Length: 266
Ligand code: NAP
Image (spheres, protein in one colour):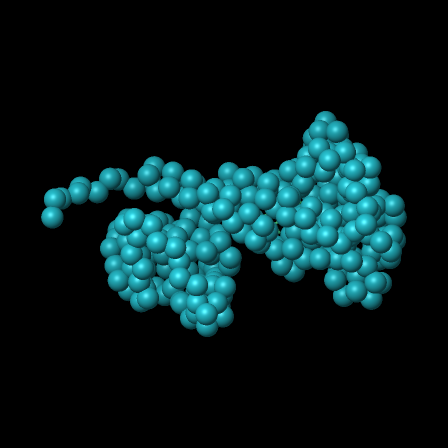
């Protein structure tokens, strides 16, 4: 059964997209990627909402179109229609705020699959960008023994300053031999079949990088290792927090970018 969205004062629901888009100054789409041909993501597979170029022509000029990311064609169509596309996933602010529920969600998934504590366990964090840093700091707070694997010397220096061990990518396979937990944030194949062959049989790998992740999942399955691709954690584990962050960022950008409209008494 379809869940009806909650009501808020002043909120109007529309089953058709045209009345909703007509004159819209701000359009907010899901953070999950658009499907082929501009199909808007929905948790209901029956939904067939597609955002087209002519839909965007209905919006006010100028207007703002928010989404996690955009296919190139949709971004170009939006620009042409005077509707500025804002890719929230590309924003540092959004990525850093989202890294907190992502790290907590990763811990949740890892702990559900193990019989040991993170405390005193050796945990690898692959990548030391926005998600990797929060992941490592969260693990340190739990007194795990954290080793960061990062390609840039400056990132490794930062990891060491934060209290982690740090190694270059070339030493990943060696570091895997005694790691109990691995949290990958690198969106490239780094946990290759060769590297996975060096892992402990009871390792728990949580791959946070966007699909297809950075793990050879087929090799992991063949080797009997636990490896989980864990996309979309902020919305899954902490929808209220993640929604709050989105509302805050979208509202601020909209208020900064759009001139106030004159409200005439009706
Ligand atoms: P980020 O700040 O750009 O960090 C990415 C890290 O990966 C950096 O350390 C970067 O190194 C490294 N890296 C990238 N390509 C590499 C390569 N080819 N070889 C070695 N290292 C490489 O990104 P982020 O915001 O942390 O996000 C990381 C990933 O997690 C993305 O795929 C993102 O979509 C995903 N994510 C998933 C969730 C979830 O719920 N699962 C939530 C948030 C984000 P340099 O600094 O040297 O470039």
